Amino acid sequence: MAFSVLHLLALYLIVQPFCVHAAQTANISLGLSLTASDNSLSWQSPSGEFAFGFRRIGDQDLFLLAIWFDKIPEKTLVWYANGDNPAPKGSKVELTKDGNFRLTGPRKEEIWPQPVISGVAYAAMLDSGNFVLANQNSAPLWQSFKDHTDTILPTQVLEIGEKLSSRKTASNYSKGKFQLQFKPAGTLELYPIALPTEFEYKAYYKSNTSDAADKLNSGYQLVFNESGHINVVLRNGNIVTLTNKTVSPSRDYYYRATLDFDGLFTLYGYPKKGAGHPGPLCGLSQKTFASPSIQLERRAAGHVDITVTADLMQTQGQFVNAFLAFLL
Image 1: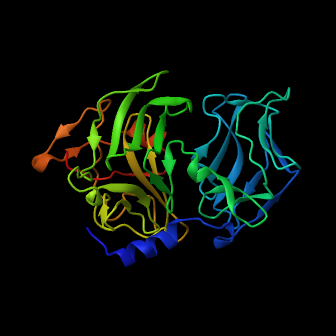
Image 2: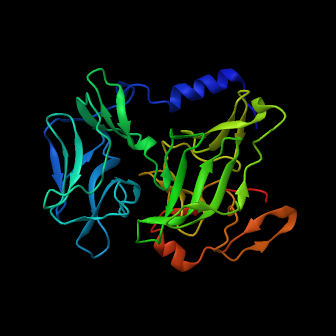
């Protein structure tokens, strides 16, 4: 599917968060903090749909600094800071009076090393699911949308070289063995890695969005737009839509696209209040990228089908598996 440059410009105006004032905000002032505990407070977006704070990992006394959907029962995480180094009870995240953003343990030890960012005037949890540190002119100095973990949300963009990394297991948020990256040649690739070196093995999926003869026909961005579609934007202004058929707009569904721990890059949707019942999303095929860790059955025309097991559905809670459709 191709669109004109004017359509692309309109898309940019939607997805690029140039200024924090472009979205509703509830500013978090310098000097405020949150503490990891059984009854931790959180910083919510203005709509209350997203929250930033500490989430307990299972039944352990360990916590993730995270962002999650706050209006669904499962409180599904969409971003986390310290997957490789969970925070013990009593840890604190603080936006200091001198503008630093720090996550420290009960003994003041640093848990999540961050580069020093100068000029921070406030923080904000946006309704897009993006948490930002902004200067006095409301320009973002740091944002969770550019500190990628395993998930992207509508309006989020992956640039050349940026990548998602799977977690180790459903309940272990340390780095796993799969990555999704937008390569310099213009292809979106899924591949396993060796840990801890992160040596890349041969990709098991490559998008057909690279043209060595004419770079203008190659991709340079992966865009998850507000309509629930995931697109590769080509340098010539055309758009290649990866999601199959039509999906409901994000005003009706909470969407996320996650590189799961088993190597599947999956689009999930959860209906908002009054928008219907949890179930397969309209217009999306029950198909997925190939994964070396899932037993696949080949079908006609080169498609790959998978069976969604009860265990997988329980792992994902009420989020509905709505797998992206691709030809291998």
